[in-house]
Image 1: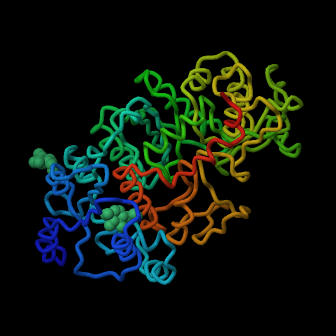
Image 2: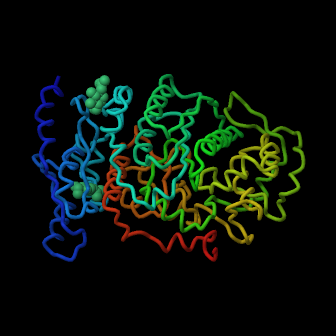
Image 3: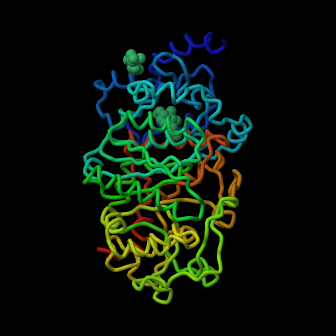
Length: 476
Ligand SMILES: *[C@@H]1O[C@H](CO)[C@@H](O)[C@H](O)[C@H]1NC(C)=O
Ligand SMILES: *[C@@H]1O[C@H](CO)[C@@H](O)[C@H](O)[C@H]1NC(C)=O
């Protein structure tokens, strides 16, 4: 009821064009400087209408001298006025103040807990009409540079819940030149797969796998879903250069243009964690492990495993450990799927504990593997050593950053207190976020990415970091 009453008023607000575009983004002129300051520290004025529809922005485009500087603000309502697009708009939250670590404002915002369940837009409603979904969620309005067109990327998302979060990720990274594969775990609650499929059906470059696994943690399933996505994406498109995989509750930290620039700096290297196993972990691959449906993990048996395939060894440090997520070159993906070496390793590893932590780092330690990262055995690429580009993760034992949100299974679930930290991380994505714990942190990251996509301002980019990770440094 309440919503119906306020609806016409809010809708009319949409027609205002309130965005003050600074003719120049740089801070040289003091008047502009203070305007920016005002945006950052100013109190929230409920009569302020900081949002402008994409349609308004478009109609204004012709009057603009320099379109690069335009940052159109997203719709707050869908076309029929049925639901809010943005919790930020509805709750009048100012992301800039959160990003600059304005502590009183952060505390005030945090006390008003906002989770995805307060959203009034239903994805099923939106995706029942593809043009509505694309319009309201801004899929088709991204400016795309030639550099991005020339460097398409393949993305895989492996999810089992939080469908809103997956769609938010997709709408942020979706570009027509890229390809996307989504695996929805068989365990997902009823309806989730159908919703994801409906969303996928709106795009000719989003593939929602029909074959679904009930993925058991620590089992080969974890990488089987990647193999399925890799195969699909290799088949459907012959252009993409890198494959990046995501867990369903990661969120992206870089724009598509920024990712393209990062991947180019890699000069054809894979970016995956890679380091030797500690001797106490050798039992993981010395003994056969069996699935325990009751415990939901693999359990060690007393049966010894067959010997390690001849191409790999612990002593030569070609049997290695790392994370299952990363950025892989197309050549490497092809090697993983089609080489005899990879097939042998994958089938050998199928009954070990956590094979997904062994296969990518081991394969990419081989000289014959495209994108191999380890010419020298001393090159350890490890998230805790801050030289792994693809992911930021805060573990309970991470010293460089203390989680202000909460730890779940030793991994930090980021909250709005972490925004100023997240903003300066060089990583492509961060794990993990939970729309039911803190939706605002995801929304503000999205707003920042959105603004950066339109401004294409790379002045604050940490180029140094990417050139000096061990798998890139010295590569030609
Ligand atoms: C689908 O959405 C578009 C854009 O919002 C709208 O113009 C169109 O009328 C809708 N179609 C149907 C069948 O509802
Ligand atoms: C994004 O741009 C809009 C319009 O210029 C501005 O109001 C908003 O504060 C910006 N948000 C961030 C996080 O920079």
